[in-house]
Every structure is written in structure tokens, then in C-alpha cells.
Image (cartoon, rainbow, N blue to C red):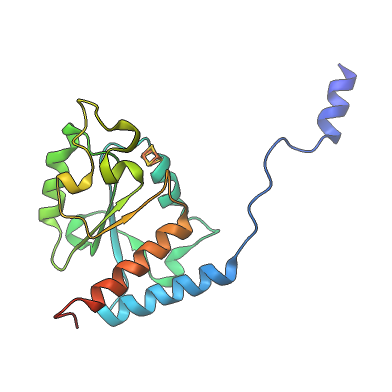
Length: 177
Ligand code: SF4
């Protein structure tokens, strides 16, 4: 017993070391994102997240954008509680049949110009749930998708890069301001 207590006091925790911080890249991405957003929308970007049947792995990465480490609110990027206040719908999951109508209505409630970002491999074509009777087979089978961010799940940096690519591509569209 004494041995276990001593080991508990002296042994290092059995957890992985955190990944090396790349603050400079994140800072640069965040600033680029807010610049393009202000240029295109005249304000910061509002995102509504929709879980359309995900395993929640993608949600953990999306939520990480708001934690003190990534702290994306400092760049003006924020998540909103209603699609009526959103510019971007960030949709995860293979879209279960039970969520298809809710996703359709959320899309209809979002004011134009609106963008749909399908997050994760499931959101593309059902991913590991493809073929199940319970899923429709991806976000694109229910609403139009502007961008897919691959990964299972994609990490917060990939999410940031995706949002930036979305806004840059939107600025390149004919008729964009
Ligand atoms: S892509 Fe992976 S992490 Fe995301 S919902 Fe599907 S299984 Fe889960």
C-alpha cells in the first residue's frame, strides 16, 4: 500500500503531452478571417452550429474554438443561438432521418447570403454511418453545401482554414461586393 502511495506521488501523469502551440499561425488565421469577414459582410462572422446526428466528436473540436486556448471570440468570430442571426451554418453528422426536416427548416430560417459548411467525414457522405437505414447520407443530400471540411474529426485549425477559404471563395463569386 505504501508503495502505491509513493508511486502516486512521484510518477508522472499518464496523459499525452499537449501538441506544440502554433500561436503565430492561429493568430494569423484569425486575423485574416476577421479581415475578410469585415470586408465581405461589414462585420464579424456569426455561426450557427447544427448537430445533424454526429457522434459529438466534431462538436468537441468546434467547441474548442471558443475555449481559452483558441479563444476565437477575440477575432470577432462567434456562435449564435438562432439561425436567424447567422451567416454560416456549420453542420455535423451524417444527417439522420429524424434531423433532416430540422436541418431543412434551419436552412430556410437563415437569412441570405447564407453559407453552409459541412464539417467532418460523416457530413460529406455519411462517413462511417453510410448505408444505415437511419441516415440520409450527408448534408448535401438535404441542403446545398458551400464547403466541406474533411476529417474525423477536423481539428480547430482545419475549421479556421475552412472558414477563411469559404469567405475568400465567396468574395471571388460574381456579384460579390
Ligand atoms: S466525422 Fe468522425 S468525429 Fe465527426 S461525427 Fe462523424 S464519426 Fe464523429
